[in-house]
Image (cartoon, rainbow, N blue to C red; front, side, top):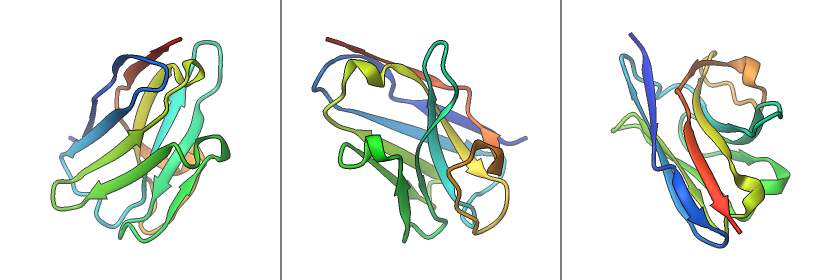
Length: 125
């Protein structure tokens, strides 16, 4: 059974940093792009970042460029989201996801077949 488990969320102040982790089990994703999304109350799920299977290519939502960094460690079947200079508008549930098709990179949630349960990030002003 495939399972993705996020960790690292919490309550922080504006300007702080957090590092989210996503540990996968049940299968390896070393030939799949992986990504991060978030969903705030009353809003649709929003793309944050994705990284190719090799780590050679990263894509970010424009609003997150320069503040967020995605990375992965295929040996650990884990990927990460480093978030710096957090703002109150970053408050949301953050989800990790693994691609549905090998080697395909996408910012669309429909192209991700495995999802974590989400971790809450709350940024106070």
